[in-house]
Length: 356
Image (cartoon, rainbow, N blue to C red; front, side, top):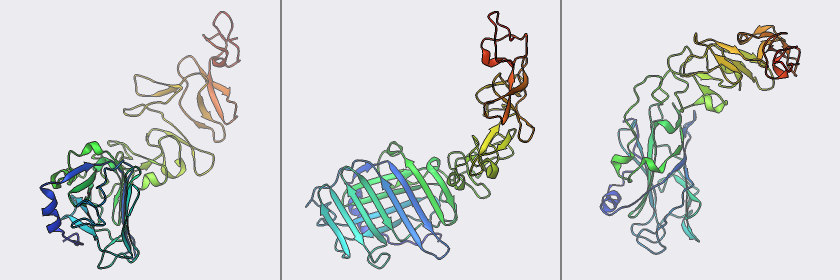
């Protein structure tokens, strides 16, 4: 089996399924890690307002029956649901009741009592879970993960569908900003993530051989990068959309000229073509041929290296230095049509609408 079942709480599940009070919530983040030394970590958080069980009620984790809490993970990459327990009668320090909050702590985790080290349920500040076991295979094929927190007949749940996944690679799963609207209830059927990915660039899931896929940025997000578009030479690999880390990543639009300057490998990407979904950017025009050209007052040459950027659009020439002195910009030569001084190479547009 790809996943070792930490605990199968069948009796609790049977008791609560028939009359469960379900509360789908938004998931701020879900992190499940296993490092090279075998140390594991589970973190889940939500900022949603929570309808908590009343103190002394059957669903009270401190005094209720059966009390405590069960945390379950649902992954399409797993052969079975995985469950962790925070039992009612645990010590060290176990469950406690505070104003508008239930709190669980177990310093000795992971052990035979519980793999969970902390649980906090706050009526106004949301929910946070920390554990010392992963439960998931973490082989890079989770695809998405659902989580359910059960207190008697009260259940909270969130679904981190493929579009929310930022990292799904061996040893690490990370997803964030799961919408509560993605779930109608907290049933098993609702919490199993969408079908397995197609394995193609563009499916929104990081598959083997990909660094990222769409909104699932993986390692690219860690360095401030974007993800290459399907159908291009750099598809599903890290890239720079606007010049951040361009020295390391290259440009997302593969037709771009990458200019490196400034700290931390930054710079700018100047596209030479506007093939969809890419554009020429502000201050430039996309020609019917798919080529880009610079409008007056916009860069056309990087003077420090002599590297040509977007050519000037018809009616202007590449002559005028910009304020930094690093670039030449396009401008309208003497006698050419103009609407403002800035467009002219001379810096002067006459009242007749021509450059002096």
